[in-house]
Length: 252
Ligand SMILES: [Fe+2]
Image (cartoon, rainbow, N blue to C red; front, side, top):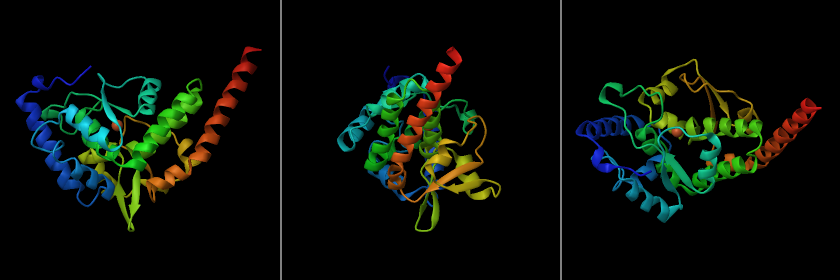
């Protein structure tokens, strides 16, 4: 599949512009520095003026961290998704929400996928971490429990991760970055729970993707996540072992 740029309508261009301008203003003091720097580095090819051309984004990504965009029709099975991450290919849809649905999304659209995810793929530490999730997904592809743990890690970091920067809470998760409502919810809702990042807690934390989040984890740096890779790998091996034991018991 590829992006069919000629098919975008004038409403699509208008929606892109509204979403981009509204969120760039909103994120000024909320997004982490790394995200804002990467977005600025991409300004020639990712801006409010026009819907981005994937081939231009690809060229910028390939030249920095070697990532590229894989066009998908929508959500794809998690193992296929991890397989692509392992190859430094990030999935994106090409459709855009309508003007009547600026804040309502059943499935991630191009604004979420591109504005939310792509800038940080220019950051080396983050880009390496994304690939590592994919590689671990492939290594444990036969274990549903290990895949579930990786999905939780992805959820609480790549999608909904927070970062403490110079004492201030900042956003790096794409699910928050791309959402006007969620990015304000973090700072305005007193009833949410923000825990310090701890790998094992994250791997055991269930999530619901159809509701606004109430549980978040904050890291001190992307390096902190990377440093806890050993406990992640240990937990995945353990999960796979337990699952095998249970299966062999059940088949006796
Ligand atoms: Fe996402």
